[in-house]
Length: 304
Image (cartoon, rainbow, N blue to C red):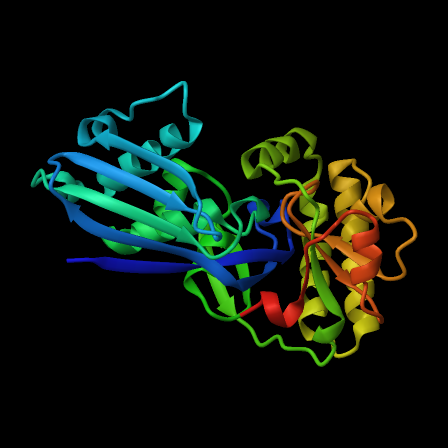
């Protein structure tokens, strides 16, 4: 019997990095996501795994044994395979029954966004595996991949959310966010994917007295969610960029790449890659394309 599971992608609008230390983060599930299709295989004690990109090209294909999962085998020639086996290993520890009967599995994953976009290839996979095995996705993430878990919350929710870690326990609050000015909001891909693990490590290396920043970010998050005018929304995001620039000791993305942009640009998630949010009174598509950024997605086409 074939089973199919689906999880939403994600974009983190406020609270990047500091969400790890208890700040309130504002996150948006996307219209893009990933499917996981599970079928029984004739090959006993074996996974036959195929991962398709959004254009239906195969970006990962492998066969490995249950024993590889039990032992958490590492493969020097394939970082992807090693990471996948680590996720499945921790999933097995949370549900030891699923590999007991020896029946092999044919697994297919299908992204509905290009994998290099950084909308949650890993988080959607982890949440889908958790759905399949009926285990807690936040625990699986923590044990295998790490991170705040906001991406798992987006995978599971179909509306904007406030995400916060309180004593390391996720608190997820659905919020209403559909501003009249969403036609002025665009998401622009920076032509490079950023590693979440590396970005988090760099954040901890630069972390000073972060507790002073958290209430400031919380206030900005509240302003962003309740903004009724584009100017208020834009100014809050601009202030957020300044605060995080000071924390990370890094220039903002606007200072680095878009100094002449007539509007506000906000980094999303890990700084230095993936998407940025641009808010502008005029359609900025021509501006970004002229600078070599071809992927510009209006708010209504990106967000659930």
